[in-house]
Image (cartoon, rainbow, N blue to C red; front, side, top):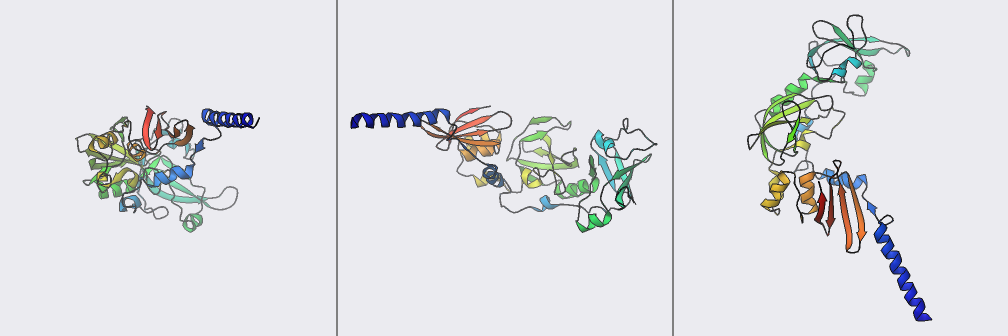
Length: 314
């Protein structure tokens, strides 16, 4: 009777273990955003120190002088200007034009606090942008006041002055052509900066370069004043050859990394270098052990076992 009970106990334990392996629900470990963030931090500048180019800035309102130039990057600029009898906001075509800052006036509506209205001109009409802030509030909080859908050309000029003619190693394979269309890119190769131009409504700067293989392209870049800061200079470029930090990686594997490709038996670090940090990481138990799944936003996923890539789907 004791033997029978022991056998049944063993069978029951095996069934529970097998069930958990098959479902993978209770035992699937999901990596948190903090865990992923740790990996993202390791993708910063190779020295760990923020470069001068990452911190470039220009003076903000109310230090603007009259005549300061702003480039309109999107047609939705008409949605942020105050309506006027002098023009029709629905048919206003300002994209690609340069507006000049004429100054500001203060007006109050409900709370009797004078709010700043910035005034711009294209040489024909004057356009008003209601900031919703008082001068005192802007100064006290040191707010970097900006107008949506416009890029401060003083900022473009400063980056152009600091970057053009210099060589760096590019960290991203997300490249664009002169028409703003995405093209195949390579990462961790030498590039020479040719120009800095106004970007788009999300990223204020477009950095043009020529790669070591002669390809002309550009990348969109954010600044410390941008609302989105995941494409700062240090995220996109390095002053040092990144290859030197990975002497243990074979030339064949490094070629895959440069071209954004992965291959069976690449390590997790090599895959991260090739594809970037995944959006989601999960650990799943199997008969053979623990497998780690990396999921990317484009539908690609990688499967690791014992730290090596064993399966992937593009």
